[in-house]
Image (cartoon, rainbow, N blue to C red; front, side, top):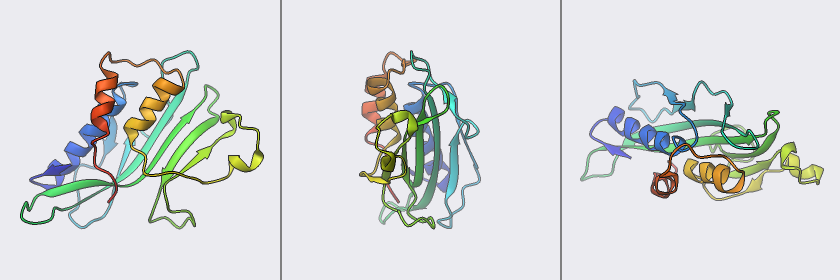
Length: 176
C-alpha cells in the first residue's frame, strides 16, 4: 500500500487487513502509529493478540500477528509503501487446540524462514511428525486464511459481501 507519508502508507495497509478480518470479527488491529522511517518493522496485532472466537458451529478461534515495514517507493513516485515483513495466522478449535498456523518470519532466529504451515493437534491428521513439521507454502495473505475459516472450516461470516471483500484482499501487498 502506498501513501504520501510513512504513516499514511501504514494506515492504508492496516485498513486493507481490517477489511479482510471484518468478514469474521468486529475486533480491530492494534499497532504503533508513529511509524519509523528506518525500515524498522512495526508490530500489528488483531485485538491485543489474543485468540478471537469466530461465529459458527465449530467455535473456531483466530489469532493474527504481523510485522509491517514501511519503505520509500522507487522513484519517480517518491511515496512510501507498507509491506508485510512477517506474519502468524492461527486457527484453533473451541478448546484452543491449534488446527492450522501459517507462519512467515524471514528475519527470525529460526532455521525455517520460508513461508510454512503447521498442522496442530486439532487438525487430527494422525501422523505425529506432522504436528511439528514446517510444511512449505507460498506467501499466504490474511484474506486467504479468512476464506479458509469460512469456506473450509464452517465459520459464519458477519458480512454479506464477504466473498467480494476477500477477493479484493488478494490484491493486498505481499512481502517486503
